[in-house]
Amino acid sequence: MNFPFHSLLNPRTIALVGKYQSREVGDALIMLAEYLHERGVVVFIERETAENMGRGEALSRWMVCGFNDIGAHADLAIVLGGDGTMLNAARRLARYKVPLVGVNQGRLGFMTDIARQDMLTCMEDLLDGRFQPESRMLLDAEVIREGREITSNVALNDIVVDKGAIGRMIEFELFINGEFIYNLRSDGLIVSTPTGSTAYALSANGPILHPTLTGIALVPLCPHALTNRPVIVDDRVEIELIINHADDPRVHFDGQLTLNLQRGDAIRLRRSEYSICFLHPPGYSYFAMLRQKLQWSERPKGT
Image (tube, rainbow, N blue to C red; front, side):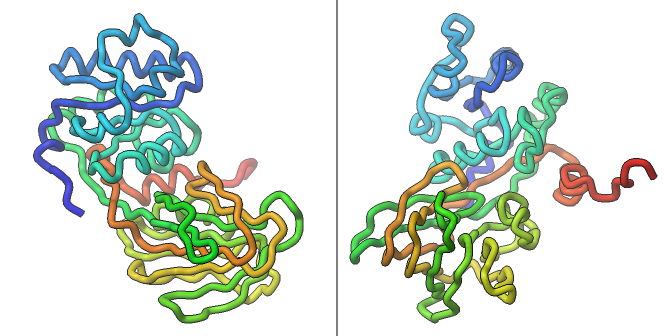
């Protein structure tokens, strides 16, 4: 998907999106807004972010608006928070082709590149167009019940079908492009993008996929048959799961939105027509990020 690269080279309208986790996050957002304003940038503050901060006087200098207005008018959005905040912003803004920059205010931060202490020093490179764009795929999902679509959604990380709160396994059929693949009895199945391969799928022993790959990972959760292993399929396929037996089945979108399922429900998944553009600072390396976040090459303590 093509993004408006002219706006990446000279962004003049920037939206700030954050999750108010502490006073430090609020202080960082206001500091960033003031810096951008002094550089002649029009600053928007996302509405829920502003409401959670509760600093009406401090935010009165900037326009507060919702994601629809951000999508219509912002050249890019800077997300202050952890990966969860970035996931929410990505789902809300993908259809508008608004690029995202991440400032890590959380813990691991696989999608938020900029450390809090480096935030302002990186802004000069951003405003001068030296950040590098990278496109990430999303997944579309629709839930079909008795031949009728009851909901649809998108996900940047993953879509997970699981057994729910009750301890018994879920059983479902898996089809790819209409071809029956297998019956799976397990705690569930993770359908992951390359971006999501370092999230829940990684905890379930799924493979790490470089984000430039065009593939989808199918990662079983605690399968009853130990021969059910993670499988990577082409991103052009259509995947269908049909619930055969479960007591409390559910489907989760990026671990943030959840829908209760019933026996006989079908979940159809495919690559979304939308993509999201991440902007990385100069010198960014995906493998360097993995080495740091996953502590590769670290010596065991006491050696």
